[in-house]
Length: 423
Ligand code: AMP
Ligand code: GLY
Image (cartoon, rainbow, N blue to C red):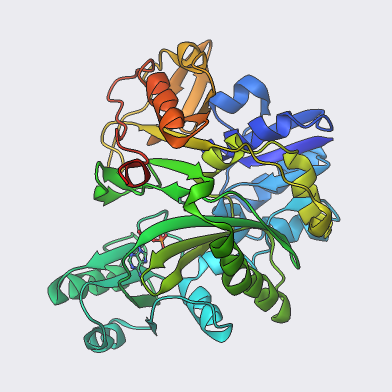
């Protein structure tokens, strides 16, 4: 089979790496790909935010299966267009992807279907938001309704901060475009858990659990980022809790979407807060997490192609999953200055040495291959990923490997997995 993978990040490199292991995959094309994907597959130019350009790539390549990585092409309706042409594509339709692309839609959906989530209010104007503010305790969470590349969630400690956030979102000062709707939300405390399930629109199959580290600084301090590292162990989620999440979160979400005539197939990412009162959904994503996917697929022992195909063909209940026991960890190496401004084009050294450490694979995110050199080309540059018999071993390997890698301004957190290892 010829598979086309849409995307340019660490998540897509991990998808390509896992798909390549399938005996039934004969060719992989990446659009647009990155320096890591270029080493193991063919990359073709493509603009992820341009539907016509992506359709042009599909028409030129004739893939047997297209796998859509990021949210932007989902939000543009790429899956709908490909299905209309009778092509096999892994990912949700534009309407189903609204679980991610509109937070007000997601909150109302959860309320309709009794899926546990924080108390909230949807406000359609600055005045309404300022008025509604008083109904919430502090701190309070204010969210832009639409996609905001990880910058749309503001945790406000004081009323003045909340007023400023509301002003900034509605005026456009904060995100560049003026929001028409914002969500005010109760602040929850607890440990976060990324619970990803595959779905064919009817059935669900859980992937192994993981925990992201969204803050830039050690001890979970500093600004939010796309994710600075992830770990995955079975101990994060016992069987009883996994079943609870399947029955109270994942399956009701899939059933609810089907009942509303917008069936969801693809990967449903449930971002959870494990509160003292039980798990609550913080957000949905309609795609694989990044960098969760790097740590999750490092543990997958069965055929990814078979699983994705089972989703596309509506027969996920027959699919088999095998996982490596033990643990995995992914440590992100970022450009100095990220998530603010940074410079590109710095040569990355030590990649081959790093991959000699047992159990290690280096997934590329913002990199590009120029002649034989791998250069930095983004904020998050690499996801150094390792498996091990337990979490300390996986972390030791990932850190040993990242210690061999260098580029100007490289930054990474030294404490990935600290909540689990510190216990
Ligand atoms: P999101 O973009 O919705 O994933 O939110 C980004 C991050 O903001 C989450 O991973 C949480 O760390 C935090 N967050 C979102 N909603 C809440 C909430 N209701 N209470 C506490 N933290 C939240
Ligand atoms: N790692 C968080 C996300 O993929 O949204």
